[in-house]
View 1 (cartoon, rainbow, N blue to C red):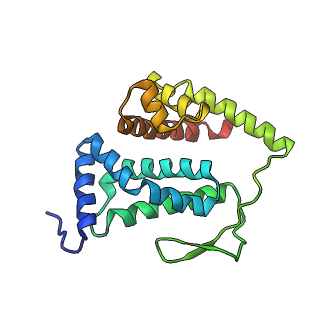
View 2: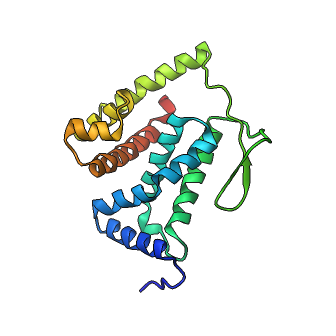
Length: 201
């Protein structure tokens, strides 16, 4: 039995949701995401200063957290653990995009209390970058085409047609929680496929 005396009421509720999610309760996943989606999104937005990237990073953060739920230890609050995963994933994203951390004007507080200074450079592409971008898009579409039909349709509508979760839910007549949960899984499958084919991108 886990000692929950040190946890706040909110953290105890989170823990019960985590335990339910581990047992396969899809509504528990959806509720955990509802509780933290906005705060994670705004943290990502502050770090990368790009709404589309922030949206993608929010989904990635939840996807990674949900995949690692069994590793979560109630020695500390779920929110602390989730924010750590989100901030680490975002830092990795920033490094990969080679954004220089040179701005001294505004800082972002991490979960560890450290301040990161981030300068979001122009996202305009030069001709060479445009060619590389188009190649990556083509490669991504090829990977998406290999997904199971239910995942492929969701990814195409979310990322190619740029529909909102709500619009997808209505168009496919699926519960909102199901749309989000399956998109998490689809992104995870894609991430693994991209990792296995990264030398060709």
